[in-house]
Figure 1 (cartoon, helix red, strand yellow):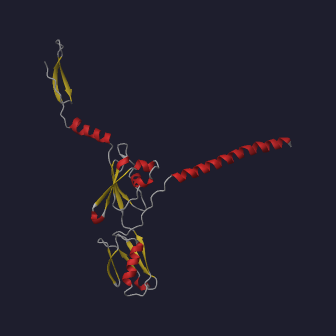
Figure 2 (cartoon, rainbow, N blue to C red):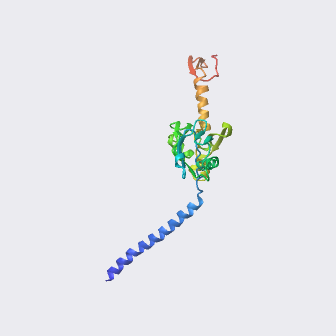
Figure 3 (cartoon, rainbow, N blue to C red):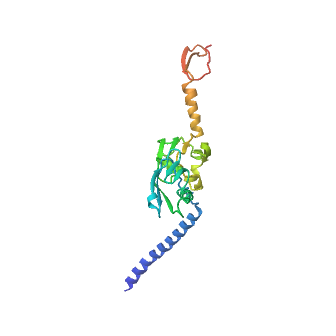
Length: 251
């Protein structure tokens, strides 16, 4: 019986230690998660040209329609003239249609459902592995878009990534985001959500730009110059080929 007690004590001691370690680990992880800022929320979806919409009337099903948002951003419905839909959220369009149909219907109950989305995409360019168009199939951040483009090359400047967005009156709005802070978790707000037709540009690092300038303007554009050099004391004449623009004439 004595040996059974020793075995029981031997088994219980490690379990108690593990229990204490797990408890300490979970509290530490919880404390760490409290310090990490939450990622920015995606904005509510706004209807775009080319989207296919279901317009449903609860008490007047004969008015139900399936329409496609025209390139000018308008939709045409029964009993109502052309109505602007692009740029509105489904809820905003629902409220607008309720107001417009209230002239023909008593307390209309309408719901707008986005059945299919237009071919929405963003363009990623610059120092990435595979620059090009990236489809938007859901909420996508800058880092996620760049990841789909193969990631940032070693020649890219992750601290000054440009996001060019179409602003009001189609004026371009340029934002600079520091993706290094987003990647190390110090500022997740830098990893903003993309909007349709955004352009992401990863610039070159300063040293990459300098190396490129040297390659283009010194190595390639400056012609090779040949000259002769006479060694002092009569060592003969030697022909030298160099890229330097400084010419030492033979004595």
